[in-house]
Length: 197
View 1 (cartoon, helix red, strand yellow):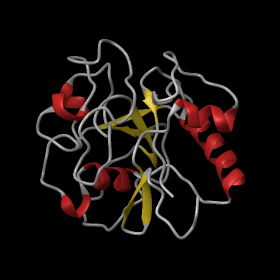
View 2 (cartoon, rainbow, N blue to C red):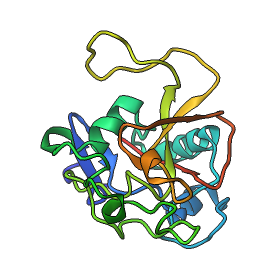
View 3 (tube, rainbow, N blue to C red):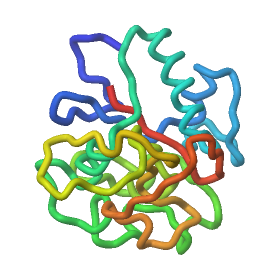
View 4 (tube, helix red, strand yellow):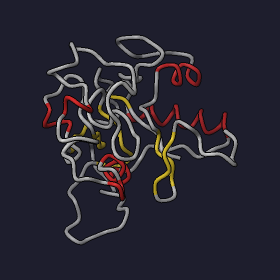
């Protein structure tokens, strides 16, 4: 990545870049020399990756690139999914209609789909609703009762946050407000991720 240019696959948000797409299988394979996904194709989001697997990918990617990739915090993920300062208050990332922006039970044919096939949200980010759930950095816990700026979430716990819904979920789980969680070692068919830098 040329440091003088914004990468075309990322969108800048308040001091960080958010991946325009979920991490694809071709990207995972280039770094990890393997592919754990059920359905295999270069442009499908990688899935069946645990939170711990994501951190190993990030460690290797950072070593290869010299950059500082991370999982988004839950607050970063939700801010981006809602459209940041361009938000129009949609229920899903980019629309009030899940059909427009998400692969979910009603339209997915029971599988993941290539990234970027649905309408992006206000920031040009694709698939933040549906396709695969996306791991976040945070432990799962309650929200603070006081207003906070870019909160980091719970300091400990047994589950990590996942957001966005997936191809095997009903529409309400694809809403930008829906919060999910899984054990950090879970490697289910619906779990993928997106990077920030």
